[in-house]
Image 1 (cartoon, one colour):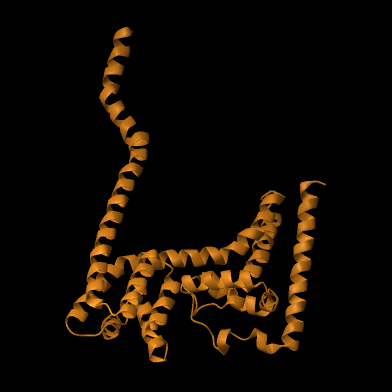
Image 2 (tube, helix red, strand yellow):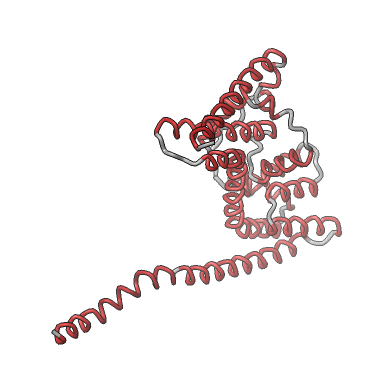
Length: 302
């Protein structure tokens, strides 16, 4: 079987799958309209990713009911961690995340197949098949990118916030009043850490234990620095140690870690700059220095 025949078979399979999803969506919509509602019965927060905003209504119409059939607890817990640590809880729920995986796992190879036939690109069948896991992985890639963005923001803000907490507590405020003060001052900013502290205060106000609210924040951020910070605060609260000393020690430790990270980044930059130096700058200098001598030598030989 040649390549065109393989592509035709793949096209028929994709077409049949699309028809199956469409019919299943129509039947499911008549049988159970509630499962096609938005998360928490309200339209979720608009995503920063334009692809999600475009494809989420399509997923609700065609793949959400199939996502609900994925019952594996391990996989659902893994998806829950992706959503929680990337800060997408207000944008997506678990069923929507899986629904987008199914949608993109079908749409990506189908789109490439249509483009391949329409523009005669001559793409190999293996590439079209590999587009299926690529589409399934796309929501995971988006969540990991958001998690990385949040980590950079938290690492930049955490030493400054700990310094403010330390000063506020030394001035006479208790720890959570100091957090509330910082949240109020940071209102309207794009600080991830300020937003997380705001969630901590809301959890405490609705009755959660202070230590539990801090531990939940550590789970959402999933960073060693935050885990260490929260563990020391919880330990200080349980043992009755003064929070002021804990904050002062944490502030000094975080400034030291930031200095070490800056040193490592500088060392990496000096290594990375060697590549363009050796490939482009050094040959140019050699030509400028030895070029005239080589030309003169070749002229004398004539």
